[in-house]
Amino acid sequence: MSMGGGNPQMQEVAQQIEEIEQQQEALEQEVENLQTEKQEVDEAIEAIGELESGSTVQVPVGGDAYVRAEIENIDEVVVSLGGGYAAERDQDGAVDTLETKKETLDDRIEGLQSDIAELESESEELEERAQQMQAQQMQQMQQQQEQQDE
Image (cartoon, rainbow, N blue to C red; front, side, top):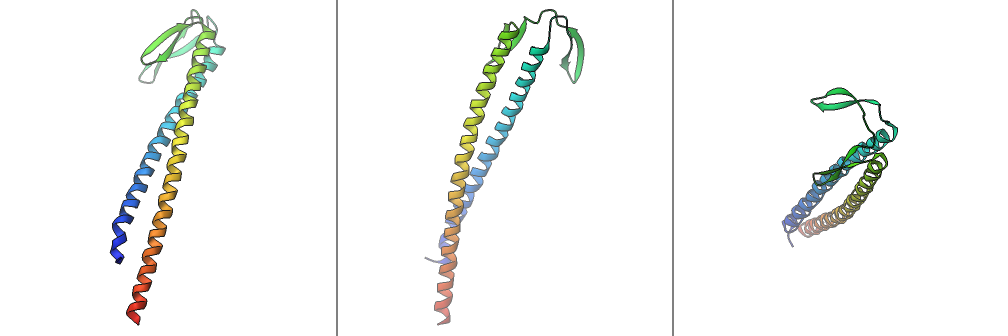
């Protein structure tokens, strides 16, 4: 086997490692997005728990603009159910719905973190393989050099 014989294999392994790293980055970004969403759910749960009918709140109307509004009835909370659907819930029902959403987010985060760990393991195996291939190439080069020196 000549020195250049392992080169295409090394390039293939390097490309596989790069693809895995890109997949990891995408999954890590998704985890970050889900954690942000979870934090927003936590804030909503806290706010719903503290608010009372007659409270004054600032409601976003878009473009970083807010209006002051008075809560007429805290037992009329509209909560997203996902898939573009929403439902009106009482205060406790809204908190329960948000807690369920948070559990779903936790499950998704856990699954993604498991996928990331698998990719890390796969990447480590490929890196070890690349190091072995490189060591073999170096050994072959040394043998060829020794043969030429004789």
